[in-house]
Image 1 (cartoon, rainbow, N blue to C red):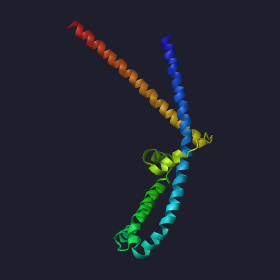
Image 2: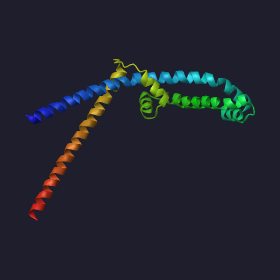
Image 3: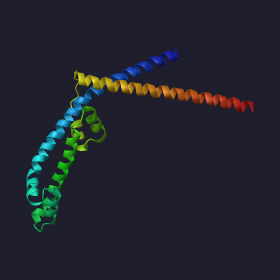
Image 4: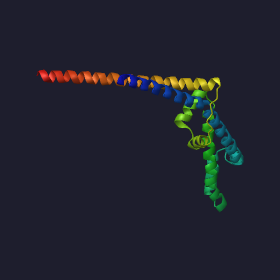
Length: 184
């Protein structure tokens, strides 16, 4: 009777995990889209912010923004010297968002992997804090949900199977060890 209850509990636990991962997987394409839109919006904004500095760098420093920043920092004019940090921040943000924008031009699985492993922290936090959970029933979302649910369920089943085999193996070795110790 006890084994039947445990078996039933494990079966329902697997179903609950499968359903939870299915719902989580359905969110992936929507989250990726919102992240891409956020990166694009910030990239457009910083591109406008840097445009004037880039024109100056093109005209006077062969397009090298770092040389422009160095000029600002080394200037004897207090205004230029103070603005060097601000210009450097804009340049750094532009470079960071340019790299992120390039990463968003890949296939959906690669973009999803990029976001889950090495997303821009600021963009990720903004997207997560303003994300609206939805249950879209389009083919792409269902595919992602099912794929993640099946993969995780198989991984959990494999892990449980492996743990069960290890426990049985260790128990068998222990019995053999005890039997050999008793006969010596």
